[in-house]
Length: 575
Ligand code: DON
Image 1 (cartoon, protein in one colour):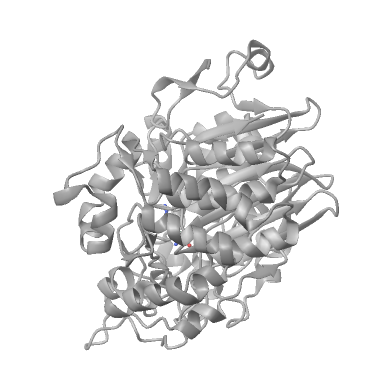
Image 2: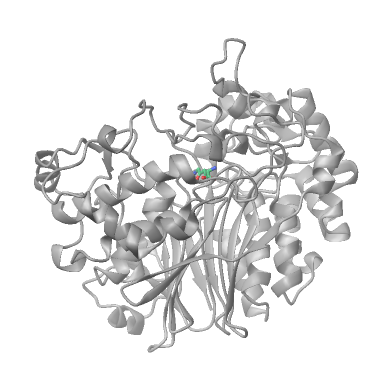
């Protein structure tokens, strides 16, 4: 395998392998530039290499993007257990090239029927984050298995048994522990060892750490996957797996019932759409906030000459931060599960509203957040979710982001199932004015209610041109997901970067509260000083997101993959 010179986040240069990079491709993408991986037929870009190869092999064997997507989702549950999952939920945007239709599949977790608005408050009425993050109450009814069955039924060409088979093999025979996996298990030791069933799987006898090169076998997970292969979603939502989840969650103080499990349904929705400089943006509608706010921020920025002002110049970052702050303020008020709250989607994504927002933006001065809307400050927490993007030889595409919320979710594996449970209930607003783990505020729109989906930032997205897929993208990163996806789009459209450059370029983020313009390493000190002079509170913090994207170059007949070097196991694999 050849190597390509790649700029790592933080500015370091490194040699990383790029699948099948030939001299021709290197010349095509310009020797002076960072190379995207490329393929002619189909491509999978994911945060973990083995799972990306599972998807690539399904495509090469004649499966379509959805067949590959379901296979990758189940494989990641084995190979990237901190985020890939059966015990969580997520969103998938699917483009069907034959009909030209694009749909948004919502398999977000739901609150159990016994949930109530004040379930995360202590006796004094204060929000108790221990309950919403690390107890059985933290867990919503999982949606991943139902979501995968729904897309396979609707768009797939293969059976569940066929696409789940690689994941079963990986769980049963074991995976080679990478440095990335070993490190994350060391880092999350306290969270996982709080639960004996988790410790038994993710640590050796006596609690010792796995080392890179060791083999991790997940026999219970293999058996659970086999039940799904044999029975479909019934193998998860009814019978012994459901009972084990109900019992484990219950023993940890949670309230999920067999009825909650059996009643779970994924939903197919119309995506949020908008336009930006002649491209069509297609992204996730509520219960995600992502699509609405990506379109809202792009609408706000469209009338400014962003390309002329330059990538990561102080003028560009200033305008982006001002647009972001206003969007996140709206998020705290207006976004929630659309089945429970009337989200003013049409207003938020209208060009007229964006024009009104621009009137409030000063070119020279940062608007203090309390002039936009008052509230408290809270620190960020860095966690894990994961995204993958797929395009097949016929132009079908899948953009999928799914999660158990924190790294390894609540940390709890349901006894005898091998399934790590989510702590997605923390994405609800436990109490108005109290921030969640990502510093996000909410009120009535995102209050806990039985059967309701917690508001998400996950933003699987496609950019279309003339009805065809131009870009597939998405990222983890909690509240930073929306701004990460925004920057991938802007880097390509405004700054003419190829998808690898767009992915490694240093990112910025502002979410209104806390009042911090967060930046990655790699933006010049002069630029940061100019931003401070405008009144921004700038902080250089750890990297944000793990974007996994594909751009379709219709003229060259190539798929160009950008795997995010911020996560060492990311990979673009094509054929
Ligand atoms: O749905 C959401 O917005 C969050 N639960 C996502 C969490 C996440 O991205 C953590 N990863 N870095």
